[in-house]
Structures are given as structure tokens and as C-alpha cells.
Amino acid sequence: MAVSKTGTVLIAGGAIIGSFIAYFLKKQGFAGEITVVESDPTYARSSTALSAASIRTQFGCPVNVHMSLFGAELFRNIKDEFGTDADIGFVEKGYLIIGPDGAQAERLAGVAMQNGEGASIVALTPAKARERFSWLNVDDIGIATFGLKNEGWFDAWSLLQLVRKAAIQAGVTYRQGQVDTIDVRGGRASGMRLVTGESLAADWCINAAGPKAAHVVRDLVPGLPVEPRKRTVFSIKAPLDAADFPMLFDASGAWIRPEGQGFICGIAPPEQNDPDATGDFEPAYDLLEDVVWPALAQRVPALEQLRLERSWAGHYEINTLDHNAVIGPHDEIPNLLFANGFSGHGVMHAPAAGRAIAEQILTGAYQSLDLTPLGYGRIRSGTPLHETVVY
Ligand SMILES: Cc1cc2nc3c(=O)[nH]c(=O)nc-3n(C[C@H](O)[C@H](O)[C@H](O)COP(=O)(O)OP(=O)(O)OC[C@H]3O[C@@H](n4cnc5c(N)ncnc54)[C@H](O)[C@@H]3O)c2cc1C
Image (cartoon, rainbow, N blue to C red; front, top):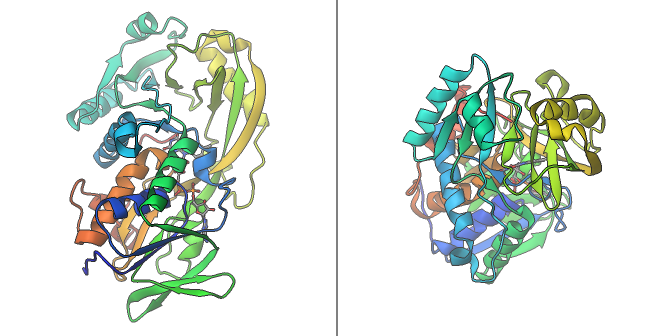
């Protein structure tokens, strides 16, 4: 594949993924022009701004563990990356993931794999889990797994502002515009066409359009199996000490973590009730009363009493083939690159994805972390790489 330190790069989408790509391109020495085309510079409906901004290393695929480890390292050392004033409020308090009775063997195998890849996860019996987390009801659980390091949460908005500002300072241009399509001529991407009809020429085109990524490349065969799926976040107050509370994922799928003076919580709806959510940002209010609250009160009895403060809904960019990102060049159009379908892991994986795309453009290969397993080739061949730890 052609490699380049100069030329013109166009990036469709300028939230966390597009901005980390632009940032790492400049950081790694790309001397050409980089333009990020962003349809909504307020980012009001971007997944990044609406996300729960948490990071875990408890994944089923080793490549995801490694992407998270790189993200955690960067978040921990945010001042080294972006200067002494940089602050994203990274709190490393771990994910506590509950498994039902019968899940022990599978969870222990998962922990062994994760730790083998460099994560720091402990498996807890119900009694040990109760000893460590006195507020936890362990009567009906089989196992709990807990991240001692590299897991927690942060402020995604602050992170986006830092990366974007650093990219701009390094010479990246952000412009408002909505990409309609990517033009392909003679087996190469020649540029992007905006909905206004304006054409922008490029040597490299990168799709970082989040939940709308499939639309931008809708003429490709096969298309990108990435769909927007609604996820509602409830901000609550509860009579519970947040000081030593982790990100808790119950076996029911309900989750809760501290945020400010209270907590945020939610749940992924069952797959049969999780349609394409294009244009729908209305919180699913019923979910709290009907599903999330009963599940959380069963797990944490103090949550019998809670008060809803506010709620919002954003879009996961689900890769319907396998719940994993699609990263890297198109197999037949080498100067068209994807950074899409993160399926709810995109903020934590943005640093690793940004660095990887920059390496592809600058050297034609992955240098730091091999993301080949996440390539577009599996979309063409219909060969999924299933991520099994899905929330
Ligand atoms: C409720 C919720 C909770 C989440 N929790 C977590 C979490 O805890 N941890 C985690 O890692 N991830 C989480 N995610 C997922 C995470 O937010 C996304 O994976 C990540 O933000 C993806 O970043 P992105 O830049 O690709 O997409 P986005 O942030 O959506 O950005 C895409 C950008 O592209 C722009 N755009 C779209 N189409 C076009 C076009 N045609 N032309 C120009 N611009 C365009 C959009 O305006 C947008 O700004 C969560 C998501 C939601 C909704």
C-alpha cells in the first residue's frame, strides 16, 4: 500500500475518533494537510458527548483488551500527552461485573485470558465480593470479576476538547460540513462530496462518522453493518456512598456508576427490542421504572430508594455482524480507511484507533498494536470476530 508523510487527508466526523486520528497523524509526523469535516461543531448529538465515558479491560477479544490498556495508559498520563493543565477526571475504580451461578468457568477463563494479555482482573467468590463491597447483595450470584487497574471512568467532553485543541494547534483544520459520499475513481478514493454539492479532493479519506458511518459509504459493496441503537442514561440520587463504588454491571445487564454527587445508570434493551434508532434521541423513560431500578435494587438494596434527576439518550454505533470495531483500509480501495462500529467502546478505544490509523497512513502497516483482526476483510467475507462481553 502507498504510504505518505504528505498529501491531503480528509476525515468525515470530528468527535473523539476523528480527532484522535488527526492528532496522532500530526504527532507521528504527517506533514501534509488534514481537514476534519464535521456536520455539527456543537457535538450535541455525537455519541462522544452523550456517552457514559467509562473504560474496561474485561473483554472477550484480546485485541480489545490491548486497545483499552493503551487508552488507560494515555488517560492516566493525560498531562504528559496534553500539558499540565489537562484534566479529564480519570477515576480508576474498576468494573465490578456480576456473573450468575453457572457462569464461573466461563468467567474464570475470561479473566485468565485478560490477565494473560496484561490486564489486572481478580475473580471473587460471592463471599469475597461481599467482603469487599459491603453494599452488594450476593445471595443469587455465582461470581464477580473486578478490575484493579486500567478500568474506571473519565470526562469524555474534556477529552474531546483536549484532543481537538491539540490537533488544531498542530495544524489540523476543522470545517463545518456534511459529507454525503466518498468519491471513488479508478479503485481509489478521490475525495469527499458534501451535501451542498461541493467536492473536496484528497489522497486519503477516513470515515469517522460514528453511528452514521454506514450512510457515508452506502455505495460500497458490501456495506458497513453499522447501525445507530438508542441507549438511555439515567442520572439519579441515592442514599449510597459513592466514594468506593465501582462501575457495577449486574448479570441482568443493568449498570450503575458514580457521577458527580450521585450516580448514572442504564441497561441495553433486549436485542428484539433494539431497533435502528436513526433520528430518535428521546430517552426510554419506562426502562428505569420497569427494568433498571428493580434489577439494581435487587443487587444493591440501598437503591430501593432513588430519585431520578435527569435522563438523556444517545446512539451506540453497533456493528451488527459481531459487536466489534471496523478499523483500517478498505480491501480494494486502499486509501479509504474505516474507524467505525465501535459498538459502545469507542471513547475508551479512541486513542488506540487514532494511533493505528495514523500508522497505516504513515507506514502502510500497524506498528504498535496489530489491529488486523478488526479489518474490513471480515465484513467482506462475512467472518465475524464476535465480542462476547457486550453491554
Ligand atoms: C449512552 C452511551 C454510553 C456510552 N458509554 C460508553 C462508555 O462507557 N465507554 C466507551 O468507550 N464508549 C461508550 N459509548 C460509545 C462511545 O460514545 C462511542 O463509541 C464513541 O463516542 C464513538 O466516537 P465517534 O467519534 O466515532 O462517534 P461520534 O461521537 O458520534 O462522532 C461522530 C461525529 O461525526 C459527525 N458526522 C456524522 N455524519 C457526518 C457526515 N456525514 N459528515 C460530517 N460529519 C458527520 C457527527 O456530527 C459526530 O460529531 C457510549 C455511547 C452512548 C450513546
